[in-house]
Length: 308
Image (cartoon, rainbow, N blue to C red; front, side, top):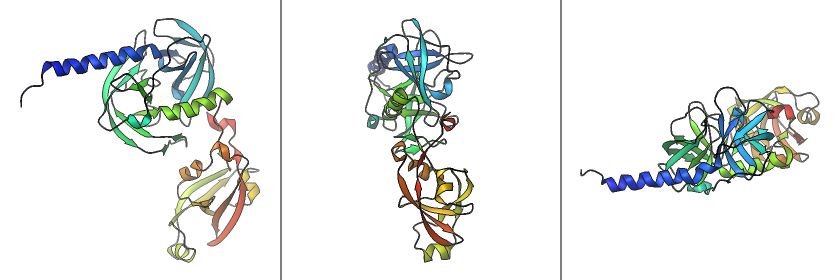
């Protein structure tokens, strides 16, 4: 095998250097925790998007811009379930990032993870190791697309951008959604959640007040009731005065469908409780002592204490 011509490697190196130079003005350092700063991305003039888990205080936050200017910032809102936070700078300054379509991220694609854990931007080279469809975080947040990176996770990495070879931002990097793995929150999720945080300071989510665990259903019950799945959700706790309590659910009930769709995992029920469902009525099908029961439940709003 003949050696790779030096010109090819030099061209790739030059492209990656230009990509970093193009995006660096949009990367900032956020001083909102002990030790080293975390990273953030200038989403709009005067607005920074960051990783929620790196913002460890709500006050006395400062941001260092690419040119070294330090400005004060306030927390506009945060969402623990998607690990996204929004900061407002005291000045409408900075160069917003140029973004790429989420569908552009492909397995094997070269990416650069940028951060600013100090006075200058740092970069790590890697690849997109896996992609997939919509998924739920362990806190129940909805991420529009699964993007996992094979890239070194340095201190201050979270909150910085993943960029392609042309310098366009694919999404926001975080180590807070998967153990020992670098994930990229796609930009469509950043914008969807960010808009809600800017307008309301939080993401509104539906709430029915149930603690649920998957349970295997008896085969004769599945057959008799023509259930599409052999797993349901057994009620292990009910919040007193909550929507489920008012609807008449009891401990030991087994939920098999919500709003007409079968459920066998708690995340499926969380997925059905988007903010636009608050105040609406949904049908809930359950088994009580093996007997089918149909109830109606009015979706409430998740209390603020569940947001952080």
